[in-house]
Image 1 (cartoon, each protein chain N blue to C red):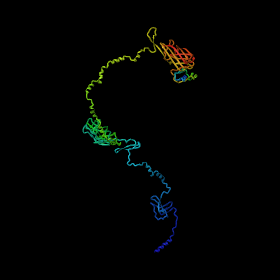
Image 2: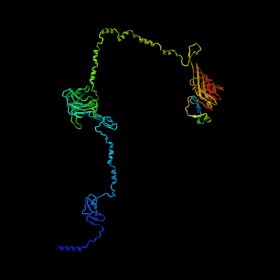
Image 3: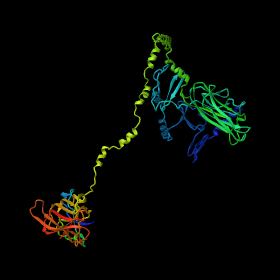
Image 4: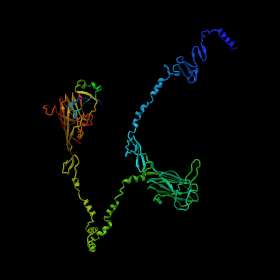
Length: 61
Length: 575
């Protein structure tokens, strides 16, 4: 499912790292217009990867 | 008178004028045998011409045409000869093609060169070779086998395909038995094919060459009268002796003259040179006959018997070698001499039969009775079983086995220790009086935190994580500690919600605190930017019913800050 995630440090890939999904359940517009993407594209990105079971969530403000 | 005549002649001659020349007519002049007009037509002759008048030497030539042979002749007045005129330059008839054709022909001088390779340049008279070398695939050779026999090896095989000896015979007479159950040779009066296999005495098959032969026969049996079943036996004899196991029985049934049977099978027989084979038959009823019949359209005649002999192995015909040859061939290698001395030498040897006499004097013929008696006193091995039998313990093993079965195995000892305490329990007295112990809940467990974490802020803490929990339950009191450790700080975090891990006992909801989002137990939380940070954000927070009132969560509100580690401790009760 397409979602916004907090960018992952590539150096940490392969170990148990935090996978943070931005909570967009109340966002009706395209994800590309979400404030997290608009304001901090260097920190967030849109992904179609499968969300892992141990993902944590972020209410972006 | 004579004078008068002479006078008249003189007078007349004086009166005659000389011949006056006249020009030739416009289109030619004809003389005897010649015409002068648009062409010169000359006299024709048949064969070599001859002059009709004498031509003086060196005076006149002549020409003539031999119309019989189409030849032109000219006469040479100097030599007084006729010569045929031929050729003459400018001839255009076929001389070029004729020349070319001639060029294609052999010159005699060429034949010497051509024949040279085939000339035997040495004297081969009375010359012989002992061995011919054959180039496989190119040469076929004829070679000496022995005696006066020769054989051929072709260019591709070792020998021409050998053809076995064979014979094909039949008989056109109806054959009857004169006496029941008496052997008769099957007659074979007609020889169709023969090569090393012949018939003698009308029924005996003579085989000249040793080998394995296939004997195939068919007999036209018929019941010619009487009633009931009748039997014919058929077998073969070799050199006038029945061959064991060769008989076959044919039962003739049905009406007379209406149920012919063809008895046919084959034998494969090993024979020596000049052995004889004979197909025999016998019957229990003289009405059984081997019948023949004449040809009736559409079929040809019916022989009473047909028998063929074909060689299966042995020295085949056509190989150039016969058994007789092999004797001649092997003869030079036989040791025919010295057998006398050999025999003499053998005569000097001992015969086995002599040893008895020779050894007799060395035999101990006495005292065997005593020896036998002494031996009789010894034990036989077979006696030991009887002797030992009284000492064998043959009884009570069943009882012994049963007794053993009642004993403990070492492996059973582990099950002897009672495991009467249920999992996650302790024994205690949870009453106000003296009582027996009862099982109370007890649990101390830990693991990777598996609840759901929701941050509020600009970014959540990130990077490598180390999330754990530990739960200790004594009775209905539960103490839980959750540690969430990250490698990278969050940004502007203002809230954290972390659900109870799935292994945690379900909190008991105090009366009046059963609705969604109601706080049910107090908890402490510490939010810090790193494990060694001096800045601590310690909050007294709460364990509450979640918004859906279908679970429990810790809610931590804080001032905006950076967080890389969270420690939550809470004590609550369960039902």
